[in-house]
Length: 299
Ligand code: HEC
Ligand code: HEC
Image 1: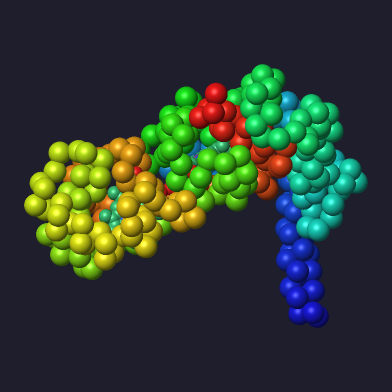
Image 2 (image 1 turned 30 degrees about the vertical axis):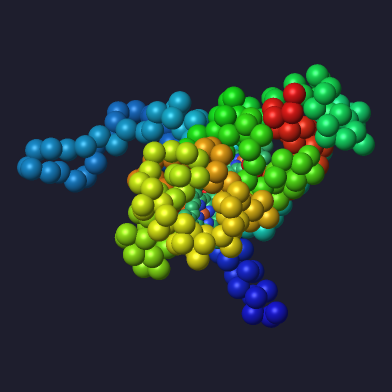
């Protein structure tokens, strides 16, 4: 305790001494150079290159006054705002304090708008035009950069309009997804499966969605699938919402259905993350967002 106190006090004093010394030095320079022009301009005693001499002109007045003004400004500033070591300043201002003040003001202002939607179910909110419009605006602000302005997704970011869900499309599940976020993890199989087995299982996965494939390879791939993939994707490949493992039979893809991309997913695995918004946005906004998202698939 003693030593922690001592070190923080030391740096505190160090900063104060540096600042006071700096401002003092400015004042000293100003006062010692404050002479006025009287009589003929003196020539400095030193001479360079045999003939080169230098006048000793006083500093221009405007420049001196400007310098005085900056010194006075810094003293006033240090008196009212934090800057002088631990000293808080007479205004007691802090950036955290200002942020909290503004947030409290905003909360007070918007709380009344959100209050009327509290206690309504997600499905009811999705049918309320005003709530849906608010959800849509929130979506454009916080979600569109990943899921697209139309919520139809992008490679790696799921389409939220197709009623096909990684984690489940029940209203409460969607609230959970937005509140806590989700991490979709598929283990990599590079080194576990041989290159032929990877090709085979990818052929099998394509066969599940009736995409062109080699029947022979797909048949071998079915065995690979049964041994390695069913734990997460289920025995029939229809997925497992508790793990966010997608249905592989519906021809809806996170990135692409190409043989190459499926093989890449198997070799490298996948690690995909939906960030949680509960702490940042709060329950009211999360519920409006969930209603908006649910409404996209349930018109
Ligand atoms: C940084 C990018 C990013 C942002 C921002 C983002 N998401 Fe996501 N979201 C993802 C990813 C990636 C997934 C897929 C996670 C996975 O693979 O399991 C996902 C999944 C979801 C899912 C689950 C879909 C399913 O099929 O189960 C929902 C619902 C969702 N996001 C809604 C939202 C909402 C609402 C917002 C705005 C508050 C949002 N997302 C913002 C990246 C993002
Ligand atoms: C540990 C669980 C787990 C295992 C084992 C697993 N997967 Fe996955 N797989 C996932 C998850 C979770 C995702 C979704 C990743 C994401 O959200 O990006 C996924 C995604 C995929 C995709 C992409 C689907 C799409 O919509 O684009 C394919 C293809 C796939 N897996 C095939 C396989 C095959 C083939 C195997 C066996 C060799 C396998 N997976 C084993 C969990 C698993």
